[in-house]
Length: 303
Image 1 (tube, rainbow, N blue to C red):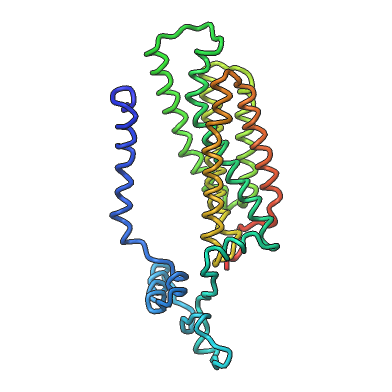
Image 2: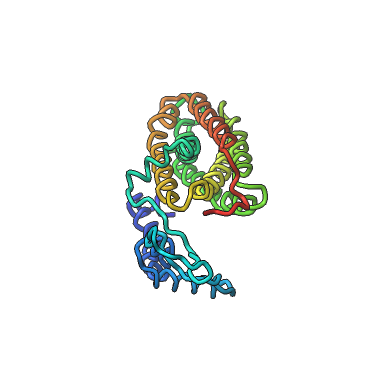
């Protein structure tokens, strides 16, 4: 509704308005007890844990919240009265945390996670951009159907709107299956379905069928992305979780930046088959990465 009548600047401005709700709700979000414990704010950490217990209608385990870093070799610890409720052994140096991600115990998981996020971003944003590029390519690259400019633009906005609706069922599907079949199987299934929906686009399809196929591909690509964001923090110990998941997400953004230069560039040059083939190859490699992850985190205790 906005783009045809105003312009993309108004669209971005109006789309950013809900983000201001974050500023209003920010004060309601509690700090993590792990961070408070690491920072030495034991009283605040205990208060947050007490509120968590109240919300879950339960009681905290017996013991006193202490920091591992405050203990000394000569200190006598009385187990019944001073059992730590929360460990706070962490790597305080950002550089050392990064190096720990590349340690012999974690390097396999780290590299697989980096490529998974890179591939997911590449495919996800590739599908989004293909929605507009394939419509434009139809008019540029040998189509015998002559469309009026305003009719083509209207069709483009409708197609983009329809494929954007795929985000919701993709998120709902991932939420339904992630705890039932596990993270790895969920990502593998939805990646395979993304591949299946993209495959027919190796050749030119009618506009309606193209929109349906991109709708399905975007739905499952978004679902895969959502489960990957759940899985990434779970594969690392608490002390490395934020660093590991954050760097993986950053690597994924590189995939999103490269995608327009490669995949969309091919479509713009009237090489639709090559563009879809490239996306399919990336999906296959992502599936291989998913299968190579060393463990499933469903139902596992996260320390």
